[in-house]
Image 1 (cartoon, rainbow, N blue to C red):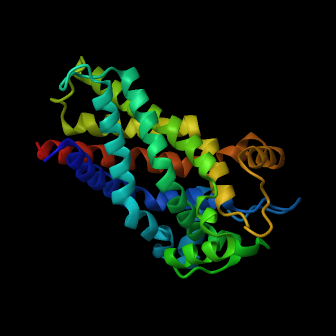
Image 2: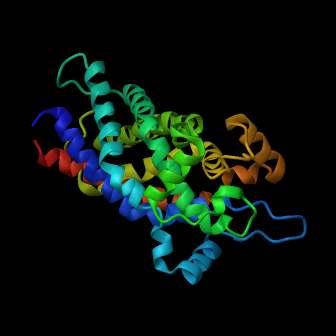
Length: 296
């Protein structure tokens, strides 16, 4: 099996593990990010992550925590195949010899290239997921098309296409890139850096599963420190009304969120994002490494 096929297979398995472990946390994150700003004197719909979980379970049952999972699950093979294969191809380009080991700085560059490649297919997937996850939180606000009750990911795609055409599915591409490029650069750089530290050198092939999970979990958690505001802006833009948009783009959304809610508005949902990221990325990297190793 060639290296590209190995990366495709291992990336798919890793992505599936990440999604199953992390989706409920992601649902709560998006609900917190996309809830309407309360009027003066009114309390927000959700007072925090625990309250969002409680209300979701009360109104939607446990299935509400997994709402929107069909879209990323259906595309997890493609997204993670692109991410890990692009990273693998970047690694091949940077190697001086076929089997030479790369430095942390080179891995950062590989992660940035992989992030650029995955941004394009990730954007419409994220838009569909976010609109499904946010619809219950937005239904009580006069938020135009977001209040539509979607029947599933296909229904979201159909509604967006009828409302805004094919371009509508790529709303939020710029903030998606602002999240994916530096985020993956940081994640893969930190992941490889931690592995090399634990291994005592560039050769990390002998590390055990515990070390791989620790490195993957810490790397996954660390990326949100760098890119979380971009993720908040992305979610806000992607659940915005197509006919009467509140935001004119990345900069406009950033300024309006900052003006209305302050810096804390750019970190709405940060707690569930961090709670999700550590175990989900630990599972992802472990599944990827074990699968990749087993393929020879």
